[in-house]
Length: 67
Image 1 (tube, rainbow, N blue to C red):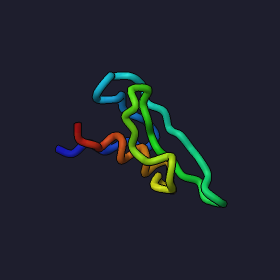
Image 2 (cartoon, helix red, strand yellow; image 1 turned 60 degrees about the horizontal axis):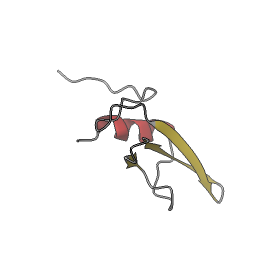
Image 3 (spheres, rainbow, N blue to C red; image 1 turned 45 degrees about the vertical axis):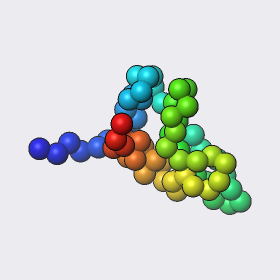
Image 4 (tube, one colour; image 1 turned 135 degrees about the vertical axis):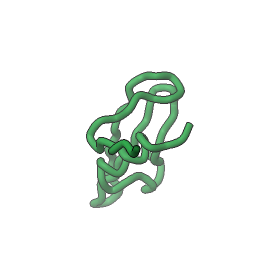
């Protein structure tokens, strides 16, 4: 049975159990999104434009990553 991933709810960090945050930044006219936790686990890269163009995609990747 497959679970549907809710693209609006962030799952807790698998390493520390804390609640992660969705971060947003702009490069030129484009917005990017990534998810990070206070224990420095991050999906997406803030220093370059290697985040996701949609919030839902950043959340989906975070929620589906393997530990």
